[in-house]
Length: 127
Image (cartoon, rainbow, N blue to C red; front, side, top):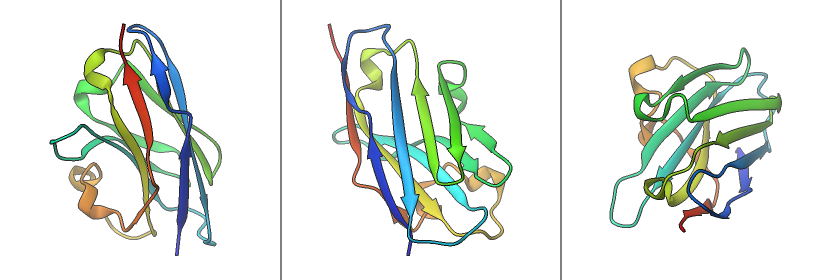
């Protein structure tokens, strides 16, 4: 069982920044897969970035590379840095985790690859 809690969402003006946090607990893995996803009303969940927590390797969605970044304090606290936010970034942001194992890089940003999910944190970008 892996428990995830997101925080840090809020309302910001276009061009602003936010730092989302994901705290993971309830496990003893030294490395696992951690993904950040977002979902807008009526749309499918979209992968933002996937991290292998052991070595910090990250795979970003091409459309978001450059504006968004990821960091971690330790293997159980992972941050998503949202910069130069646009109205189209408005969404519920989720972090998700899956135990270590073999995953194809091409699948890392697919929601179906992750068994454990947080409750989400809302990001609203509006003037």
